[in-house]
Amino acid sequence: MLFRLKNFGRFLHQRNSVVSRQVSTACGVGDVTLPISTGFTVEQALTKWGARFQVAGVPEPHLSSEYIISHVLGHKTLNSLSRKGLTQMLSQAQLDRIWKLCHKRLTRMPVQYVIEEWDFRDITLKMKPPVFIPRPETEELVGLILADLKDCGIASEDMDTLSFLEVGCGSGAISLSLLHSLTQVRGMALDQSAEAVALTRENALSLGLHDRLKVSQVDVMRDADWLLRTCNPVEVLVSNPPYLFTEDLDSLEPEVKRFEDHAALDGGEEGMCVIDQILALAPRLLTDNG
Image (cartoon, rainbow, N blue to C red; front, side):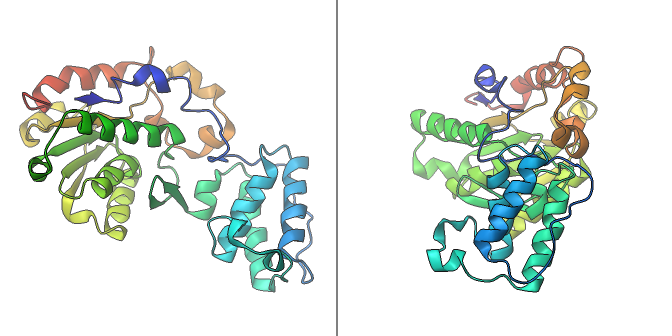
């Protein structure tokens, strides 16, 4: 079952969109003059930084402010705070931390890198530049994979022999989400980026999934022979490959262009070089029933 490529058209025009949950940008507009002082409540800080981001042209400015301030307070969002919680005074240390993180947003650093973590389905992943940030559409992809496996009628007793291979793992979002949902399955994750491999391993360890995932630094374009010799055939081959035309990279949003790994985006002159390579290798990477 060659997921992601099977559903490629559905995600093609969505991957680089900025959506509410992603909140990926902040504009750099020179010095921020918002004072660091005691006397700010949570609500006042939210309002002031939201206004500053709005003046700076930051998309979804108030949501950007909320993510950062929530993180400093130790929350995912501020929904869990009561009215009393919103009116609590922030400490000087909290104000300093908020100021520092908001400054990063003003360089157009994605909020995922700013707060150094992001929720993906039902797991929380550590995030570090330049490793590609998983998009909400990738969560849908995992849902499709799980649904397709269910539709195939694989019995639970057969799950302990089921294996998958992910090409281009990035932060490990797809592989680790699959392992979290399918507790008997094992997988192998590959990426050409040393930073991505290191981050996937770190996330696997923090989630307690490292014993079921082998992570290797492999460039599928250059190391195909090694991959075919080393990797046993798998039942599931999954990838969220780069597909952008090389010439389009210069027109990407600054938060993507400046901070994320271009190799995770660049699909070559026609956007298909990595996809074509995966399709060519698929018959030898998959089992007969894969």
